[in-house]
Length: 268
Image (cartoon, rainbow, N blue to C red; front, side, top):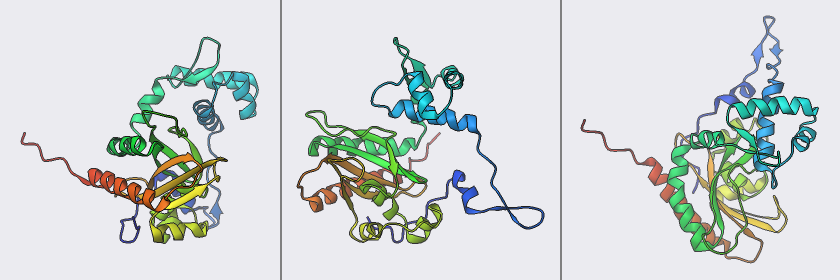
């Protein structure tokens, strides 16, 4: 899927302050407003809990946040009151149902359109298949499907890694034209592999994000949606990545076509 001729994605509002600096009354560039430390810590606590392999204790989270346990407790109580985190019978922190409500609203139509193809890919290839999206400096897994039988490398929704590491991140960048990519990444020069991915239509990586794990990904661009990639992840071994990429490209095309369909006007 070549990015040439594709419409540029809108720059998310969260990125806008980085693109333009404000000016003081004397004409000098003013520093951007400092972010809320409390809110940042709350978001970070959510990230730590939902991405942990094993449910952490409040002491674990406090240590990772670099705060006193009493501060971590106050943040936790706030998140509990909003139904985003809770504690199990042993007192360890786990996600609460409120997270599912938030997740449903994130690129909901992209998730719905992708699920049939991801399910088909996962069961056919016996690999975890997923869609990852641009998340500023990171590549974030939006939705994933594991094969119904056998064992496969797990790729959890919400998993994130640097945008310049791994096939999904390369494919997300390759789905953008160079000017758009420069704008969204603040002028950071991309790896040479991004141009290679844009030219051949797919990206391959091995042992970049996790040792012993490989991935193949293709760009998934749809007007009005975040830059994305459709990918599979598997235990590193010799595979025909050309054939695999063609299968992924076919699925990405079906997802894009499904998203491009407009509902028929109502007669009512």
